[in-house]
Length: 276
Image (tube, rainbow, N blue to C red; front, top):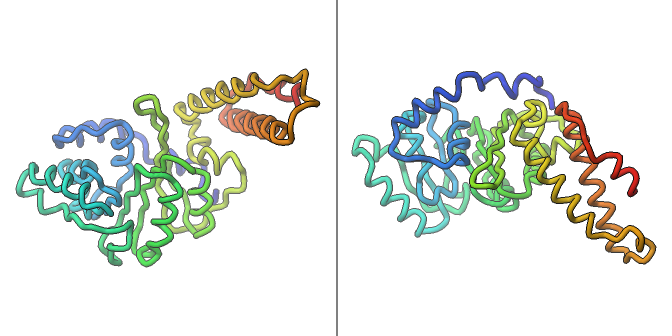
């Protein structure tokens, strides 16, 4: 990464109290995942929420006064109708600050309509398509708040390839599942290490405790799969089995490397080296 390691942490001090104060100003109670997304939205600038669904994030952002207005867009008429029903229950003075618009991704957004774009709650492949098809607004958007639910490594590779820099990241656990939120903007990003692309450069540098929990869970899952391989019959394995076993070992090695960078001792490395 071109930015300093401290850049991932410098804005976090005092954010907890600030968020508690803002949440008190909204009738919407966001889940931990959506609350993390909202916390990444810069204050004072109009935002666009892509795939708004129920409209919870736009309502929260406006009612707490974090942003002056939100363009809430969705490809489906059903989600927009739900969002409309929720916005109609708002204070009339705030209701008009949310504009609902039918749009496939960013296609219906014009240059300069929002300084911040939020894309969350969808798979990484779809998110990449939406970003790719929204090139006409790239230069007019200051901050991209992204929270892909899958293919995070592919999303980071896309950002790297297309001239974006990841500035901040957070990982949260919500209802037993792990979610990553990242803020990106136009800029140069050097990210050559595979573990940074896989798990997130800022999360690693911050020694994010939720990422450490996720790595421990992944390690346990992979070791459980490896136990199903009969090492005494390794000579009889099919090419597919050999490839799968090797890839599992590589995943464990990557987890170990990541944990070492975060200052945690790996406990499985001797077993991995012995089995391979």
